[in-house]
Length: 243
Image 1 (cartoon, rainbow, N blue to C red):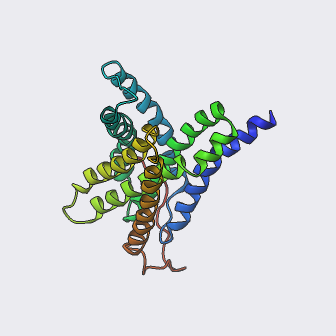
Image 2 (tube, helix red, strand yellow; image 1 turned 135 degrees about the horizontal axis):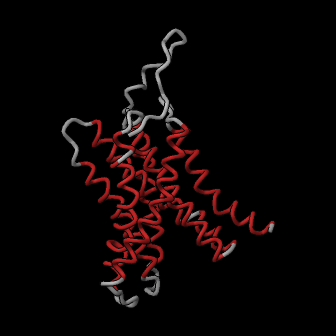
Image 3 (cartoon, rainbow, N blue to C red; image 1 turned 60 degrees about the vertical axis):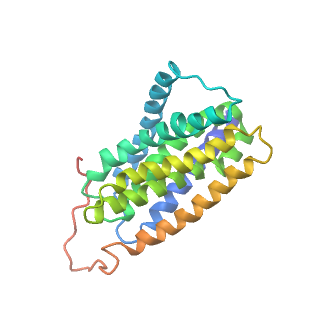
């Protein structure tokens, strides 16, 4: 029983740590905790949407695991696009329209929270099956990778909402997350090619570097950056509203 709780803790830890990290980076106007928890649950639901879509695709498409070209379809379309789309529909379709989404950085916050819901639930499934080694490996690879995909998606969603007539950035958001996700997975799927695993590591490192840059850009783009809350200023209604 203790071992089961320990594994569960290992499975939950990376998603919780990354979620907290992004929350603390939202320095100028933090989001309502209730809405963040709902966003996390949206991510859990997106796992089931992914499973349904993947099962439907599997009825019509089979992939030769030894084919380099078929694994491109597998990595970029069947896995990356389906997973990122399943998360994207909640961020763009629901959270994007919430009045609490009121600065560019919020695109990153909500995208990461949805993605951590997805990654954490997925992580539990993998860790229950694979044990401590799987938990430790995914703690430093798969879960941070999902966060990186989400930050890049959220960066463009923030630009889409707050840059005049730049709504097409929403398509960029889905595309860039799918591109990095697909590149990462492709290197893992063809791991039988000598040295290709370094490609997955390289894509993760590049993505994390871009993510850190994206966080800084949107932190400085906040309309609240020079508006400290005054004690005499009336409180803004920050209650979670239906979207």
